[in-house]
Image (tube, rainbow, N blue to C red; front, side, top):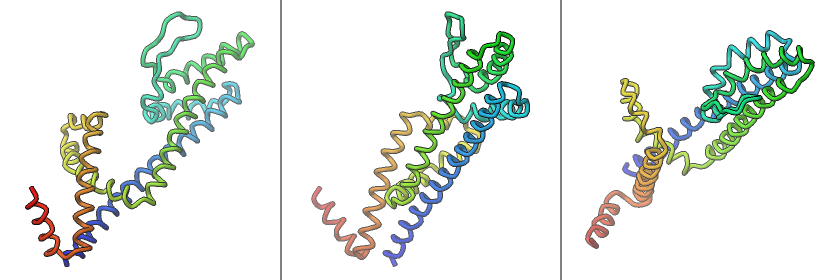
Length: 224
């Protein structure tokens, strides 16, 4: 019976990790699809040289969503053309779109294409970099979905994080501190140790009977 319980625990944790990773990959793939859609609309707007009002309206309507998805990748120190100063923490998508529209108007007035080309290429490059990162993350998760050890570790981590999720949903916003890099490293180390202990204990229980496992533990404890 103890072997059955150990096997069920291993299966449940691995399944939990699998479902969690599957949902995360689905979210990333949704971001990939949206970024592709955004790039296609941007390409239509650029090819129309600013005449496609419908494409511009869609780009503008979804600019905040796209900007939020980009995160730190969509923020930069920007030097406006013809100036000698930088604008710090410049949000590329939100600010470049209106600049692109004005650039098309200026280019038509001056019969040039330099301004619109600069803003258009800037937007495309940022979005392509983001798309590359998303595809890489999706491919890595696809590999992880076939790795039972990664799935098991991910399942353990989800169980460990349950108290933090509960506290966060109760309105304690300071719990977001766990998203900081230093705390993530601590959580990963803790998760690894718990996963290792749980895996070894479960495997020993499956291989040995509970009574024999107890004897083994007592022998090990007598050494210290």
